[in-house]
Length: 114
Length: 110
Image 1: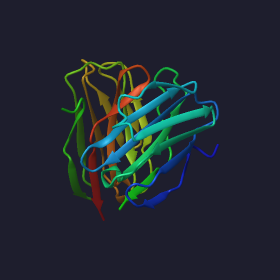
Image 2: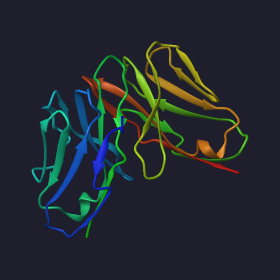
Image 3: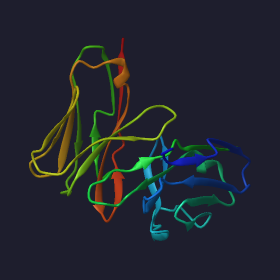
Image 4: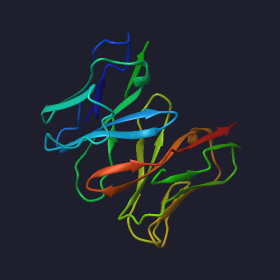
């Protein structure tokens, strides 16, 4: 298995532009999580899906952020419009959701908004 | 206020030394996990502890879950440069989601 695949690895965009981050979870995992990591706040959960359905989006900072999971093998996190304070590393993770199974993280997308 | 408090925040030691990092909370958890994150990569799961007082060993790493399931420690024996990384503890406050501590950044100098 290739693991959790995120794209792009790096994204530099201008303030006000739309940004779309992509994630392919591990086949067979039924839970998918989007996290944001910064030096100041560490790893923060933004939203998670179970069986493609959003379960908890309370971590989404504001309406500029949206996430979708149209099928079991693909999810997107969109920021529109982007702002400099959105600069961070965004991680996608998936898990089987069984018992105490851990998460498998992707390599992340480093987003810089200038 | 962080649900999981990790200490120390930074640790720099010489190769061959032993070290312990801590993860504390006022909440009781059904399980607790430890991850290691290297620069430019996502966190990688090291271990899951479930039972109060449980001790698990992974080569030179020893993980312990507190008797009351509120805290955990990670002990590394004879640290090596390859152990350098950010060590994160994580626990489920509810459902299948995980909350992470802020991590301990470990640097092992040759």
